[in-house]
Image 1 (tube, rainbow, N blue to C red):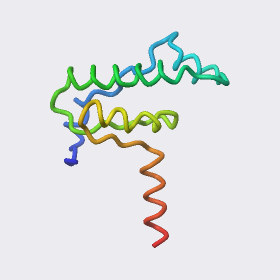
Image 2 (cartoon, one colour; image 1 turned 135 degrees about the vertical axis):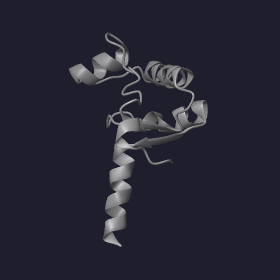
Image 3 (tube, rainbow, N blue to C red; image 1 turned 180 degrees about the vertical axis):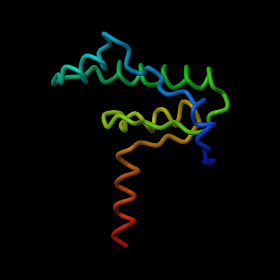
Length: 100
């Protein structure tokens, strides 16, 4: 993964709008509902990822900042061919490295 300068980072897409207002994923996360349409949420994440890649073909890594999204990382990786990172995994790996 290439390093990003502060000036260049300002031009990066900030969010992909994976969770559209009113969608099952959006309602479940914001209203803390007990159930989630898993297939619908997965389809929504894949659509957002492919949309983002189509709009910004020069990106090489997707970062999932929401702690609810890591379960979709493998599907996004497979669908886009990009590296997919998430904050939970990054923090877990960092803490493990600090223990050694």
